Amino acid sequence: MSRGTNLFTAFSISTIIWIITLFLSNGYVNEVAKSMPTYALILYFSYALYKVGGDLARLKDYPEEAQSLQKEVEEAKRFYKEKGLKL
Image (cartoon, helix red, strand yellow):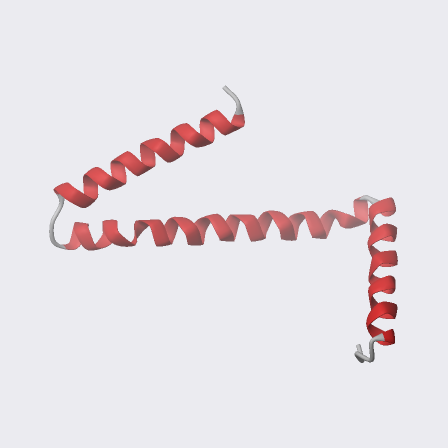
């Protein structure tokens, strides 16, 4: 199966389990079930930040990309300096 199919399957199963838990439980379990989507979003964005940070940390392994990024930064600094912004 492709990565998208696996993601869709996992998301569907998780959603079904969450809905069943939400409607069939009471008390403390119901309160926890209500907050599960928030925790899932927090975990997703934490993972995304980890991946982006890791890729930025490995930017030294790609000298062409590092030089290109440095050139873009210099262009941006020049552009904003012309507009009167002090960096």
